[in-house]
View 1 (cartoon, rainbow, N blue to C red):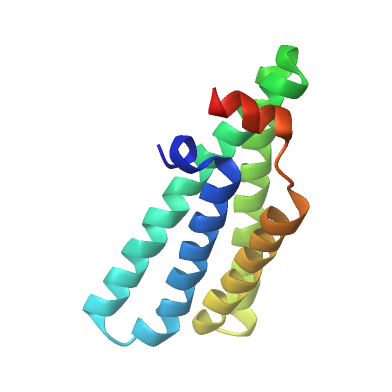
View 2 (view 1 turned 135 degrees about the vertical axis):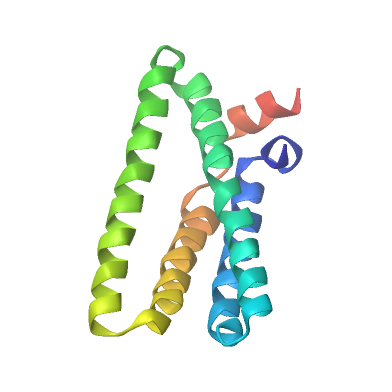
Length: 135
């Protein structure tokens, strides 16, 4: 619904900002059970919302650019998410081993900020896709 209301790019910007805010709350809230529960809940809401918005954007782009390759585009998107999950788990494990638990939110902030920069500056809205959504 968010992607339909705002468009993929704006929705991703909003969700990534929310994700970054949730990560910044973790070091502050870690010593209070209610506060950390709230921070993790906010994190979960934003993290859960990202994949459908990304998938909607991939499908919309594929419909415009390569309509015969929707399944391929969708498959690559899912593969990219799985690569991100496995890479994040690997890096998180290294951080836990070497720097400790409280280093993980800062690494998460850095990774989400990198994604935010990609969405903000590298992904330019495609006029044909934007016009197709407006109809």
